[in-house]
Image (spheres, rainbow, N blue to C red):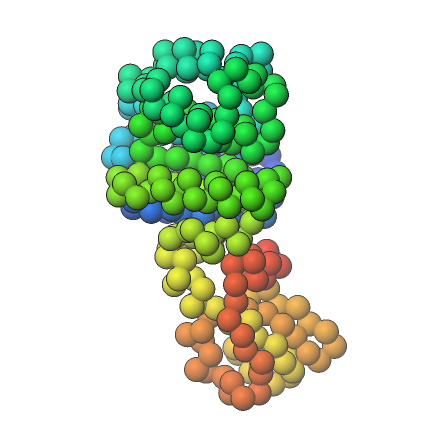
Length: 283
């Protein structure tokens, strides 16, 4: 496994990450999704070992706390803003970052800067949002990172820059040893490149597994609420009622227990599933 998160817990005064577990095989991309405050950032901070937590996190089979130095060598991180000194030029980043990594490859770094149309003489402070993302990717790829952890990398990027980033990520995982954990609010990006989806809702895992399985799992159901058997109503997720009508999502396995001719059913997309799960106070 590229990444294995088991029974991850973290408690704050007003929030609890509750026994979060999921697994990412090597050579694949996993989308990590959920509303703001659902627990995505806390999960990522735990994976990067920059916050205390209970549970166990393995990266390429290594415990991220016990084998912290080895793990840092094999993971790359892309966050909202570059974490490099803003006064440094990209040429200075070569020496600054290279000293931290055993496998740092300066030639590869400069090749990637050229590929990403980044001038080595440009300062970090002069980079646009998209350029900052590309710089972090260039650094990660230049020390042979096997796991990329991306926290909202496409937020604020224009469609062209987002499309370029998707191409870079797809090229990266062509090596079946490389993997990506990708936190984002933009479901179209996930529908384009993700192999696996993990949904966090109120600090708990609602779903973790193959994207195609998720998209084939749920219907949006609409109709007359009075026609839903009372014993069956707890099967509806995120129900919203309008007088006698309603809408919700429902696991397709449960649809055999109702008269489908009485209701409108349509396939749910990732955004639909997120919206309905966040409506449901039981989750």
